[in-house]
Structures are given as structure tokens and as C-alpha cells.
Amino acid sequence: MKLLTFFLLILFITTLHGQKDYRVEKEIVIRPEKAKSGLLRFTVKENNNELYKVDKSIDFDIPHPGVGVFSNGNLAIFSAFEKNVLLYSPTGKELKKINLSEFIAEYEVPLFFYIDGNEAYIVLPEMKQSVNRNIFINSAGKIIKEFDTPFEQINGISYSSSAKLAVTSKISWRGVKPVKEIIFRNLKGEVLNSIEGAFFKGEFTSAGFWAIDKQQYMLINPKVGMIFEERLQAGKIVLDIIDSADEVYIVTSTAPELKQGAFVSDKLEILVYSGEKKSGVAEVNENIAYERMEVTELYPVVIGKSGVRIPIAFLN
Image (cartoon, helix red, strand yellow):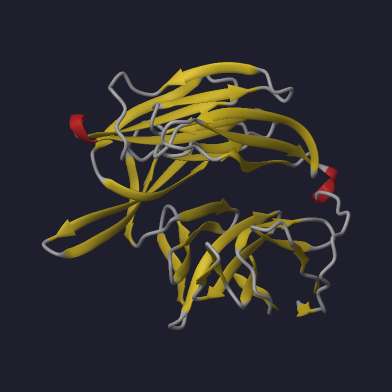
């Protein structure tokens, strides 16, 4: 693939293969204060058209909930503080509340989640009980499977709903030295494979499991082990990974600088892989506070936190 010129235009773009594409955007409508609650708004879009909004009250100094959308348009709001999941239909109607724990919420409790298709994988560390709760639900709120694993510090999870395969990135300590492991499990909680490494985001593809860490990315065969790994040069970091059809897009950046409350990069580089083979590279030489990347039928699009959309065109 060769790089074409990219244009700073807002384009009307259709979704890959005409399929429905749901995404959710988060907005702080009213910032909370010590004596006043705030308002957090989630806007669900279908093929970039607004579908519905869900508002949630937020209090000062309490972590915001996480959010994701299933393939059928159902919205899931994951609250680490309240230790629950709220599900909404594509009309914005609340469907179900799933309590993840019977124990009292703690301010610093993390909650990890990953949605694949119409299923979600959730990991809730329960430090007082010395376990990590592993819970699998579908878009209607039914618990498919659940099991506990020994309490461990993790920094990333992923899930394949078709292969029924869960993976976590675990960090333990040997004295002052961190020990990093990527662990693959089935839905019974059985360890299928464990390799050295770490990730904060990962995607299952037909080529294997792609994972990104701060300064490296890797492709792993869940049964066999590492296929390959690439480390970035000093001064560069990995921001994101997107799986679309038969291609994987890896977004890297020069070290972002804090400007006016946002971390801004003056150069993004997008690496494209088809299977195990690198098939394209694109550069975005713009000052941008990276928010996300969307892959569409016409162009991959980089989106900044300010809402600016930068289409990147590739040629096969």
C-alpha cells in the first residue's frame, strides 16, 4: 500500500460493507463540584447518526463509569465505584442492572471490561477477598459464565466471543522487578497458555492475538506463543490498535506534550498489517490530541479530542 495525500475535510463516509456500526461518545455536560452533582452524557450513534442519549449523574471526586456498545446497539455502562453494569436498549430504555459484587464499593477499585459482538468480558479485582472476579455476560444482561482467579494486578483484558477465549495482562513482582505475563483462559477459567509480555489493549484476529503496550506491539498465537514483536524507537509510543475486516491498524506517536489540558502529538504514524505482513504506513503531521480512530469504507479517519476528523487515504 502507498500513502496518498490526506485532506483535512469533514467527509460523509459509509460504514464498512454496509453493516451497522454503533459507537458511543462521552460528554461532561455539567462538571461536578464538592457541593453539587454533575451530569455525564453518553450519545450512541449508528453509522455516525445520533440514535439516543443516556444521562448519568456524577459526583465530585468519584471515577467516571466506563461505557461500550454491543453489536445490536445495546449500551453498557460499567461502574467500578458502584460495582454494577447498566444495560440500555437501542431506544435508550434501561433494560437491566447487573450487580457484580455484594461487597461495599471502594474508591480505588478498578474494573476492566471488553465487548466483542454481543458478549462482554468483565474482570473485577476484589482485594479484600483475594480474588479477581471474571464475569461473561451477553447484551441482554444474562451471565454466560463466571469464575474466580487469584487476586492479581492486571492492566489489560480482551475477549473473543467466537473462540470463547479470554486473555489478561498480569503484572506481579519479584522483589523490585516487575514480572509481566499474558494469560489465555477458556470460559472454565483454565489456563491454556501463558507468555512473557504485557498489553493495555488487544484484538483477536484471524492471524492471531494483536496486543499493544506503551512502546511495543506484538502478534501472538494463543496456543503456540509469540509470532513476532516490534519495539518502537525511543521517544515514540503506541496509542491505539483497530481491527477492521482483514487489516489491523496500529497508531503510534511522538511523545505527547501537555498543552491546554490535553496531551498533544505533533506527528502520528499509522501502521497497517494484513495478516502478519505490514502493508502500509501513513503519517499525520498535525498537532492533535488523539481521541480514537475509525476505519470506514472510504478512509481510515483519525479523530482528535476537539472533534477534528482527519481522513487518511491508502492505495492498494
